[in-house]
Image 1 (cartoon, rainbow, N blue to C red):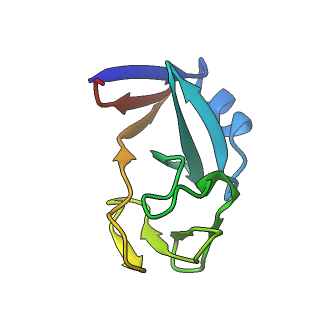
Image 2: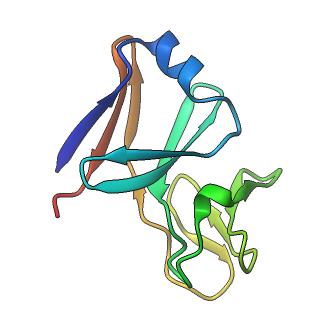
Length: 109
């Protein structure tokens, strides 16, 4: 596992990532999507597992699901489980917000 720290404080991270906005974040040699709802962060693979569409251009519905812009497939953010569509689940990565910033854990590749 590889751990990355974003920001130097909780307040800094909250200011860096606007709520309900998907941000592209480069960590090492990998780009991921990052989304904040309140003080909860979700990190996920940046491309749809179906056809590789950019999930950075995706949207969030009222149920808190990530929607792919290409075919409107829906993914549950916490688990990555596909909720609508026919494709593999989305790869998601653990995040932990603390007073010293946001820690994101990616698998070793």
